[in-house]
Image 1 (cartoon, rainbow over the protein chains, first blue to last red):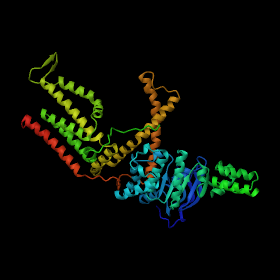
Image 2: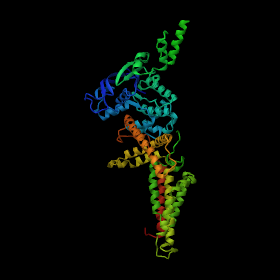
Image 3: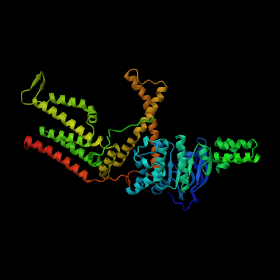
Image 4: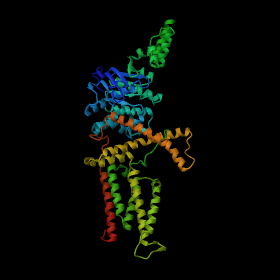
Length: 293
Length: 274
């Protein structure tokens, strides 16, 4: 749905960014939710952000979706510098380009009917009704809810509600979607559905940022950023992050079960490589078994 | 927890009454009310009642369903009937007289007329609005009809947005209440015994968490709406396009005829003194 042409260019850029929920960022005893963040996320990347509670994950999501503005430092979203003096026009454009799926599906759906909820963003942007209708149908199709246009969100399952929320963002033809623990309240089935959609979005060139507590989910991203006490503690591919047992213990992160098994095997002296998905693990283990005869 | 909550009394169907545009139905309702209050003569009440029955028939809403929703007004009906019966005085001799209570022939007529008027009014508006339009449709229609008022500074969009969100959150809050009640029961709160005061007091322990949770929801919803480019009613368009069709104007003509008919019947019965 999005413009594929310039995948890879810098999309979200933080330069020595600080954020405090207190009033005064310049006072010496200000406590910062985010400290000295230097981060560049390219267009079309699939990034997972992990970390303990109050490590600053959600603060980062709020900054990217203009709910809050940086206290110190700079934040660029698609080349536009973001701050409290951003004019309304530019803010609307960023809201259109950067969508956010929240944790609780019940608190982000606005309308009483699925199709009206999906239309909400487009209505706000003043699109003509034929265009809204066209895009609502397209978005419903994209999340696999074609038959649900006239349904009431309150009668849908959690996973379906989150898909409606995603469709509402897709209708605005976004360039980036942030999932702020969007699967936390879902059952495993709903979680899988949402992960599948994230991958599809990524393949369409949309930047996907998944903020999560579940390392199994993080393992499916292309890049994992670990936050700890408001700082970036690690930034790398899932393989790099999840095979560094020492660092994971220090940061209080339980690696995905598969990575854990592989790390354990390696410590016990088996020559297995890194693996973070069940398929990779099975592959590695069978190779080792064959090699040993 | 997955109980379904139906809002209002919407009775789905595909009759001319259902198909009439929501905005037109509100106009029709106003015309119907005018007719109800214009009716003064016996024949005009006959016309009004026949019209209401025809409306029920056309809308194919089961009579039993309608009567059930009329049950609620029975006390109002009884009170107005009694008041009219006893407090209408006339120059003629009273039919019955107990001390200061006197019943006149005119009082009986007046009380009967008032009862019929209220019954027709409520039945008619139930059929026109509650049974044949969904709450969402009514809100959309109200917004469309009241839109001109925003030109003189009345925040129509804000009010209708509030109505929408209220409608949207009724099932969610009902679920919340359910959850809180269960949670409080598991902590030993008793809702079903004790004096009325005691029961009301135990309700407080449900209402306060409910308030807190709805404030939290409201907060999150506001952020979510902003993230979806909401910036007030200015420049907002709608997925729904409302268009008046031939049927709407036919209905308008029918209801206008009803008003004219009632006035005409009054004139015939009472001469030309309105």
